[in-house]
Image 1 (cartoon, helix red, strand yellow):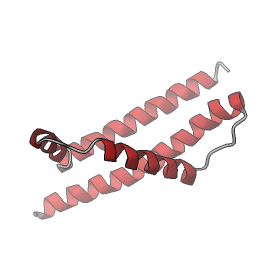
Image 2 (tube, helix red, strand yellow):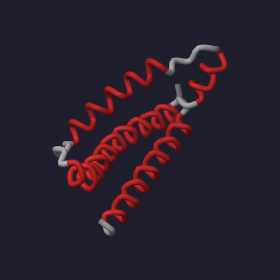
Image 3 (tube, one colour):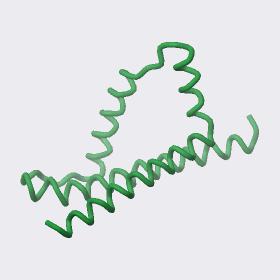
Image 4 (cartoon, one colour):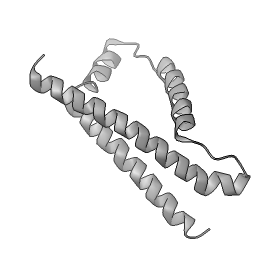
Length: 109
């Protein structure tokens, strides 16, 4: 494995960890804005959101195991660093869009 490949993989790992916390932070805010005032539910902390996300991720991963060689080929292509970087960027932008849309909706509540 080349040094360049390793540094890209470390970048993907760092982006993934940063996205994990950013998404959890966004979910806590969306929860505070919409669920707490509407249903009187308790506020969620970032560790609680992360724990629930991990639980959902584990169950989702178990149910989506690749079954054929084509599935495995597709799965392996996402492990490539450039795909990982693009994926993390997409996750960040979608989370940012959801948070922004949620904030705009709070202006009309």
